[in-house]
Picture 1: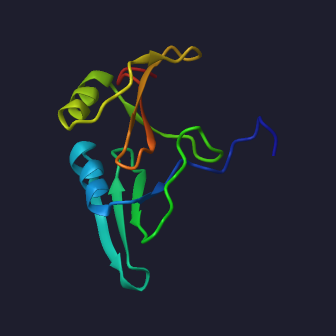
Picture 2: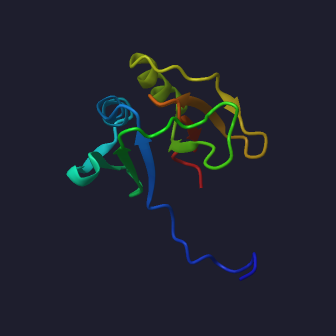
Length: 139
């Protein structure tokens, strides 16, 4: 397959995250970010929770708890997943929502290649999250 071929991939189904404090992260992703719960299951054999969360475009986040999971290296940046970016139509309402919940965002920046505005913030485990603005009327 070369660069001009169409990929058989049709999108991202889900992104999986492991929380150090399941209840705190569940609150963050549901109450603060406003994601809808699809399913929540306790897996006794693993002493682990699995929470499936829906985004409006049909993609999902899976939030797990695992006893004794090591912390994720965030700074300095490590190889692997760098950050998770959420698409929004307008940055300011989401930044205000985060601020009201005590979550700080970095100053708004502009992507030098696309001209789109974006900002970063962190989840309860210091996972870097991004808000990337794509206006509703953008094609």
